[in-house]
Length: 561
Image 1 (cartoon, rainbow, N blue to C red):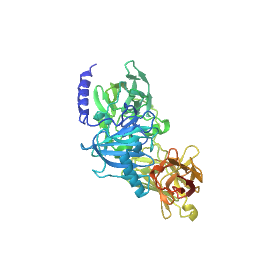
Image 2: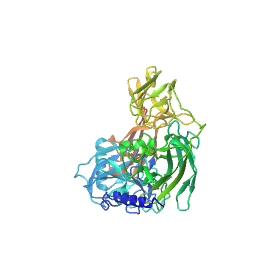
Image 3: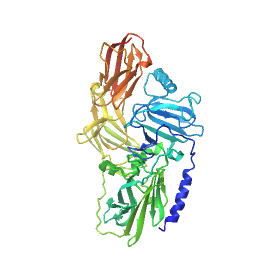
């Protein structure tokens, strides 16, 4: 193949660039062979994945080891997200992160509980001093778990630099066996601009892919004119795992010359929501398929490397060219798509037409919309493009476009509740209406006087909703007036039907006790090894409050020797 010398030079330079990171500094965070359930920078809901999800053999409690010498610089425990998390800062300036843990090593666990009891909160974030919790490479620092937003037992492992950018841990020598090529499942072509066409249409076209025996793909020939771009759905599988994980690099070429690259080696957290612009967001919302655009569509995501014209192809009439896409994983396994393109100016092209509404949003300006008791405030750079917005209010329901347009930032929705009774005002909240039945889902709502406000991440349909129902509290492994001397744990289920749990507080004999909350099972757990009370007769009191202030109280007596 004529392009071979160029690609050999490129691959040699590419591998050299990978070795800018220390290769033997970090060790494995687990004692078992590393098999991934999730790869670095793969596409997730509203974000790129910032680490490696390492399988723990479907078990909780595997030893988690410090990847290198350092000190524990941050400990964070939250109900959602990363759950129980540990951050270790190393002398070379990098920080490793270990998330979804079940518990910490004895010394760190004691440190954490001391702070939890001090502030009387399960959720904490502490920043130990440099010399407080020193660790050595390979030392036990925690146990793997399933805490926070984890969908199953695993260890989430990250490496961050001094600027808090997430970097692919495999760049540091964390070795994952991978001998398979990436898989490409779909290919789309996009007309970009009013006069552009693909296969006589001015709308996105799905192209047929034919798999070749060598693992590459041949696409059907495309007739196009004007500015066009392409998008693909692709994933990679490592050895010993069936998970569809992310790829490492995507490059595109026009007649042998590179014109675009997506480099998944690192990113900053403040740009991670740019994923919704990188993918075809409307396609994902309607088809549940994340296709990655191989052109820069007004997106300042640092992963995108424009070599020529932001990855956009300009096709002239009566021309022929070959467009290639190279998808590779970290181990340099690669799959190619070849797409023959014929320049052909179409007549009578199918045109979907442009939507217009009375409400136009300028990306660089502030837009204030108001109707009845509802206000919407959209700030500069909330949208990627100037946009005609659907805006309608009926009673207390706000229709603000379908959730098919990606946003850079949040916007505010406000409701004036002056005309509601005082009894209702305290129970009202702003809800997103989802599904065919328009089920109300709580949006974080703040009240100032008679104004309710919520900062919203996605467009959609919203309404005022009322929650008058208290949370429920149910003992799981004990009854009132029961002897439980042999019990290690006390377990209680808490739930709220509408606005979810805001906070809880539990005491034994009026002393605060630490109850760990697992929102997936809605379970509170107290460990009697905390030894808050040594009394025989004990009075338990649990108070649970939802997000609009409805509160429920549970009380019981139990006995222990």
